[in-house]
Length: 108
Picture 1: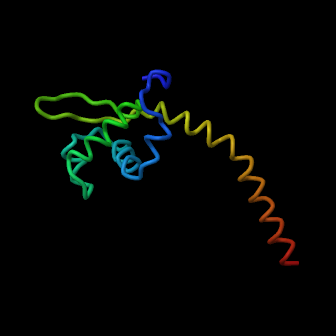
Picture 2: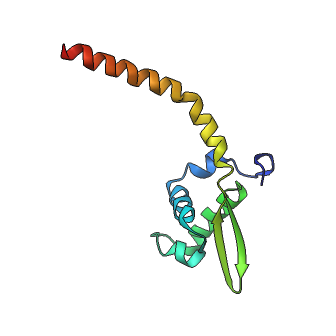
């Protein structure tokens, strides 16, 4: 789902630590909700709500196989996060270079 069609903000979706953990799980492989729920100390209903937010943000898709619903990561919307963070890399690089210069000049 293109970012313009997403109903939830990608940034909002990944702001929650549980949702970030779910995304990491799904990065490894497609999983049914029962397998996802086993890995968290929360109810299946709570996991389902997290999956709904991720789905609305376009970060996961689901498909029915028999009675089971399986979820799969859709990493494309994460590019928006990557682009936003990459803008700030120059600042991190500058700060690290300044720290390196400070430490090296202090050693002399």
